[in-house]
Length: 232
Image 1 (cartoon, helix red, strand yellow):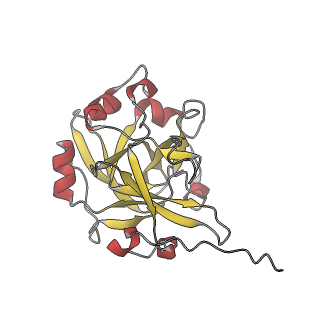
Image 2: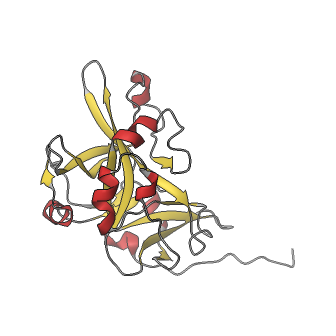
């Protein structure tokens, strides 16, 4: 799965990357994030009514349009499995009608160890931007409307499967329009990442705190492996 990620690009850089226009307001506090977390408003690319690519800041954690008010306090639906997304009521309509692209530079995953979960930072081998395939939804309450999104995930590749069984579905630049425009076979619009596309390294446990920020979060740290006392 993908539970935290990094994006420190400026609004101008994101607009240029996707040849997009800005839609809506930029959060006053936006200065990029080394620790994007669920329920935060984060950059998302989608098609506007005129067919143009639009950049909006949208809540991470999809709220189905048919959900009740209690959905606002429920555990956020941050990921959707590519293999079952068309069958799940929470995601089916969004997958069919509302695709999205989520820009990033990398993401975090946790590996189980004897000392507890060890976070890793994962990014592209060629240092190019990451773009996740996503879906978005609009929920209308009594007094407010909330746009929200989820990131599609798939089985992790061999080189990452030691960290976690799942990984985000990534979209290449030449696939941006195909993914946003596909109608008949949306899953067929994606070419899944290949082995060797990603590199990763261990990082500080500081990323576990969603309030933590700064470039130190993605700096490689030496692994401290526990030793077993065989005399006991």
